[in-house]
Image (cartoon, rainbow, N blue to C red; front, top):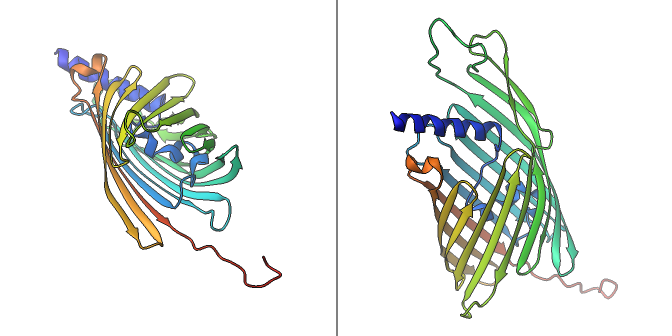
Length: 320
């Protein structure tokens, strides 16, 4: 009986997340910066893509499951900016939410680093296909029925990056859209409110810590809908930029272990370089959910292709 009560409590928590802190909270947020801050789009050289899958609160029925892809391209060969795309699928209980955004960031050289001012425009869809078990003689008209709704969405962000440091401020779901669906009895409407979210992020890399081949990078992400606040902090030890291990903490949620390995690093003569990382994290749940959750598993893959553009020299004396 106690276990059933805890499962019910966990689902209530998941539901609160869906209607409060709605954006995904990732341990590998370092691979998802442009999705929550369009200003970070294309800051890195070349073209990069990231895949992340998150299975939250393993073994808890109806717990969040999320998958996302983001891809970006640095356009400095043609103009000072970056282009990107984000695709997110999030499932919580009966809810299914999908977001697709196109990002543009304009880059300015500032103080030895790059400042990106970015905007993301896209579509958000929300669907629900619930199976309720109310008393047969007392159906609740406030219970939502099967529904699908779609609306426009927009994000904005400022992001600054130098050699060893980055920082950003951003907001997602700027229109704070309200999506409307039918109630279970079909006699009224049920609203789903997508809250506007605010983000602050930053990170610093300490080079050559006790070893010329060892670096430590510390990253922090603050996200809030002005009702719930979530802070995630991670610290990783990078060895020869080929593998890493680290720890993370998210307030009131989990303590994390992170592992990663660069399984591909290939040069194509003097024309391009390709490299890829694979990362895994395990979040050990804390609080009441820890008694029934088997933790959270997260997988991340990052692939980058960096072309080397030849320097064009004019041969005409009027174009030096």
